[in-house]
Image (spheres, rainbow, N blue to C red):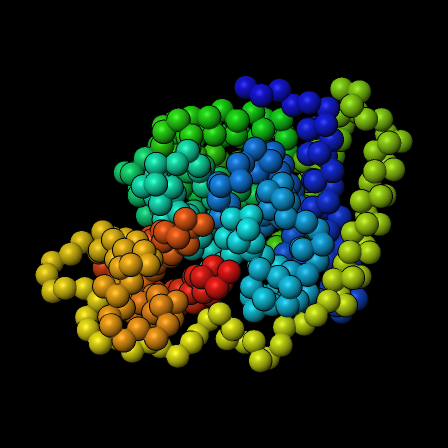
Length: 419
Ligand SMILES: Cc1ncc(C[n+]2csc(CCOP(=O)(O)OP(=O)(O)O)c2C)c(N)n1
Ligand SMILES: [Mg+2]
């Protein structure tokens, strides 16, 4: 197992601090009437110790609580500032909700609003990695309350069945907004096989780091998916639209300090002689001031232009002069996979789009549009080597469609096609 050097330990500390100060800045700005929405990652920051161990060709498929995780992956607080104000120079071009960050270059998938809907696309990416015979992996996360959703069980089954290279992280902060979940999550109800789940204390950065190092090694060697159940505390209200003082007692709120990963890691590094209290205070202030000025800059950043509302999203559809697929019986997954892979090879584009193709990129979009009307859920990623990855759920297995998720998938597809 890799041992953390002094530099690594300080990097972890600095990144966790960045996450914390960005949250506090956003909270203040929100109170000042600047920015419309804040969702905090406070208490969940130890996951920096997961993402700093990823390789460039790995993928992160996060949810809204994963500020620390994406910073550890290489996103910057400057970028998060722009995302907070939903500016033009963001992953979605300012067309997502505030702080629904993404970064195609860093392989960070766009945070979806419907809880749990990130998991099946994550499986699709991992499946693609597997089909390409690569040693990369996908880290995907979900909150404890969302583990009661069908998405969670679909994803677990698919990942197990295909032995996908994935690390699933349940971020168990004990609440779904104001609803306590510790007694009724699937692990507590004995619905999950307990031995499959490694329990981790989410305030313990070293423990998160060590467990991840071990899991990554095995996943890259082809062992299939790993599952962590990480107990942590949400140190803030759910979002800026919530006040947790209304449903958590003063004693409970006071006790949260013990579960603060930043305080625990700082104390650990002071005990280990990596840093002293004075150096910590200096670093803390430096990070805080840097973030203050980055957010002040971000506020002045360019806004999205109404003219670009549908840029990279829609185009005039190409003329299709024949059926895309020959008549016959096809398995859904294989057919989509095969068709899109084939369609992206230059010399075979005609097979996919017909003779009168006006715009091959639009053609792919058209196809995805068609798919989205036929299936409740699908996701597609373009890789640098010009292959598509597809994951979709058979509509018969789905309890209900989530159109907003399909839309965000389309957005992402178009972004990657045009880059
Ligand atoms: C499908 C869906 N249902 C409900 C919501 C509203 N909602 C947003 S966050 C949330 C709670 C999720 O709790 P959890 O999964 O534990 O994550 P946490 O916020 O605690 O990190 C709910 C119910 C939603 N966004 N999507
Ligand atoms: Mg929760």
